[in-house]
Image (cartoon, rainbow, N blue to C red):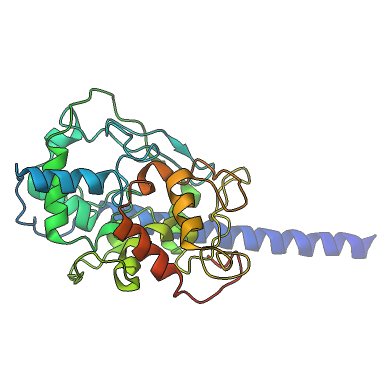
Length: 303
């Protein structure tokens, strides 16, 4: 009995120490996240002004409804008046705001909008939360100007903005580079990427495919999203592995992106923003496929 009590004391002490270490770790990581979100970035406003040229506005409309993904249901919504809430259990509750001229669109100057798109920096100089600017920071200045120009033309909406809350686990995952919430921290603001004219090549597709990394991981091999509840959709493997796209053709991939139907006939989860990706033009679709074919074949789940 004495030995049993001693064992219990030792186990209890070990659990107490481990719990204390974990508590300190979580506190430190959350404090680092909060401090980073409070930081003001010294990034000048881009020299961007709205264009009324019909071709520029049309290019911006295409980008907003395709590559930029702004009009996806879980982003800013089809009318850009605010998206559906994305509830991620203990990680976060996310809701894209109303960016029409009836709300935030009116609060931002052309330069401030351009900086938000390219650098993930809000009007007040602080980082935006979750908006995947790091995935479209490669867009050429002309495309950013086109997006700004189109946003100025959309119908004003009066829907109030939903609530976005990054919870404790979300803060820890961000600091551990598992899930990006503190967007501006993950962008190299001194780097100006050189992007060629859109063409159906793997080189251009490498830029477009960055849109996939937030869900499918930096290696494109999919797997459960860190910290997400078990009921949450599990991103698939996009590498040419047997568990991924090895037996797929471009026609299979094109059908998936445009209809949300996989090669086996199953419908994708609503988390996949088919409403945006279906609007890729042929060049963007072929370039994305060409790049995915160059990836090393990795087993499912390596993210």
